[in-house]
Length: 158
Image (cartoon, rainbow, N blue to C red):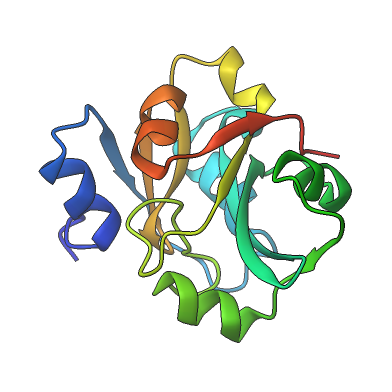
């Protein structure tokens, strides 16, 4: 694939948001999509973020955390004014976002879900996240990611 053509890249282009796409050869045997991306692109793993879909009080929401950490479900629920969170079922996450697991982007989701970006992102000029498929990352400013998703920042990484 040429590197374009996902809902995430279409949104970035339409909104004229500065970004850089980074494609790499995805290895299906790799245990972690995010760590694979960091290694393939030569980027510190703390700067590469994974998009995780959770169920907060019965409603789907998105947590975006560094690939080196885990999503703190209690912190995610608190950031969204909820009481309890658990990881969403993969099928539900894929249905709601329009992406496949391992390629879920916080951008251009089929259904716009509440989003929380881990506070560590504010320490970088740009961060990397999935551009909508395995083997394709987008680099953009955390503020642009928040603006495009209507997201909020909170410490949600464990």
